Length: 180
Image 1 (cartoon, rainbow, N blue to C red):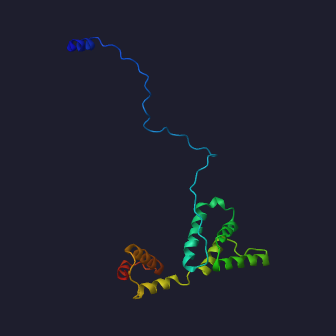
Image 2: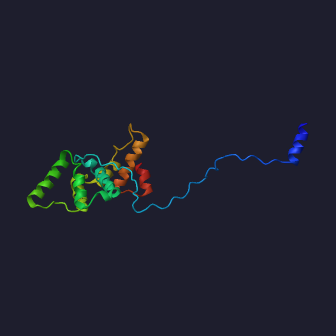
Image 3: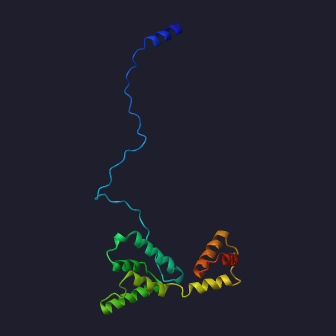
């Protein structure tokens, strides 16, 4: 009986019922038109540098942090003076506060702020807040007998070693192996 029914269906096929099915899914998203000139690009929030007290061992990190922020958010600064004044807002204690106060005192006396460009700021900052002789200090640490891993982790020792090598200006691979 079933064989007979199958034979009839094959011989006289009936049209399939039309079902309301959704269209097949789109495999790739449609290409959107290019953004208009009025569309704004969203940007990540950039972190400001930490407060600075004038410690020489933090000077390079602070200046790098300021320079990076300025490069990433350049549109926030209208001129060189704004960059300098913005950086000075992080001078919250110690020698940094005294240096900042001195700059504003000079401005009050002469009606001209003593630091005119960001480059001038960087140069004066290096003189006042970078270690006096980083290269000599690094060479002395690497040449001395007291530099060893001690209780530090290998990662910590290696990071410190690479920083000293960079500060010392050592580039010869043989020298690096001997010093390590």
